[in-house]
Length: 97
Ligand code: HEC
Image 1 (cartoon, rainbow, N blue to C red):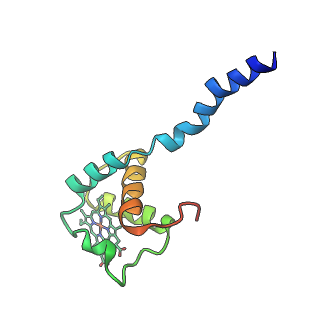
Image 2: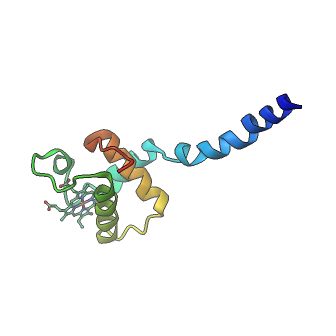
């Protein structure tokens, strides 16, 4: 009986918890970014010495603002993907903060 219970936990419940993590798509983030975000500034903005962004929260906020300015009407998931991509590629912030 215990085995069956463990099996249920593995097969049904664990993937359910993993889904939000797997939903972040760095490739999608890169594509969205490269197609829409290089109009006003290029990637050197993200790696300059005096960049304004100091943590993951600010990065997310900034991308939301830039996305609004660019009139892209992205879904939250798309903003999350681009945030994850920029963080992974350039900023390297701790995502917990
Ligand atoms: C309408 C013009 C415009 C577009 C399009 C735009 N941005 Fe920006 N972005 C700005 C401006 C202006 C700043 C502030 C630059 C400064 O202060 O030097 C900025 C700054 C940033 C920063 C902060 C850089 C730093 O100092 O660390 C990030 C990150 C960023 N943009 C991401 C994006 C992303 C992602 C997109 C695509 C959704 C995007 N931007 C599209 C105008 C734009």
